[in-house]
Amino acid sequence: MARPFEHDPLGLVLVRRGGYAVGIATGPALSASKVGTRHVQSRTAAGGWSQQRFARRRGKQADELVDAVVGHALRVVLGGDESPRSSAPGIPRGLVVGGDRTLVAEVLGASALRALLGLPRRELYDLPDPKRAVLEAALRRGRALRITLTDPDQPPTP
Image (cartoon, rainbow, N blue to C red; front, side, top):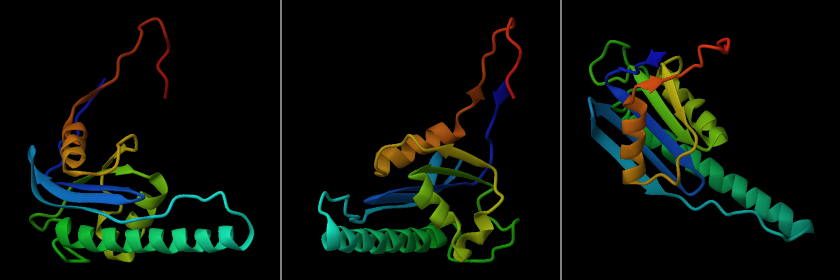
């Protein structure tokens, strides 16, 4: 079974602790993008008060990362318009997301990006830290035709 993903333009939102990449593509090429880094401290082996202090710092850094990605996605993917008409030129018709599932969900849950809810989506959570090359690879994978091979002797799985 072949499943094309021919939505044009296509929005991309990739986020991991420490990095992000957002873009919009028409056809096989990115027409606009933003790639950056944000430090989010990793876990610590400390205990007691230190552990709680580091956990609060990690949470604050992750919140700042999400806020930054929302702002960049609003500007790059939606052209700065929180409530674009669905038929407006340049507004994505499909979305490729990847990186950390929790952070992606937080970014897409922001009210500023509500126009992206309900779009057909390809999920690529196996991507490394977002860089320009990773964003371009995600675009190629997002556009790729997915083919599911089945054994004729086996019943199809849902």
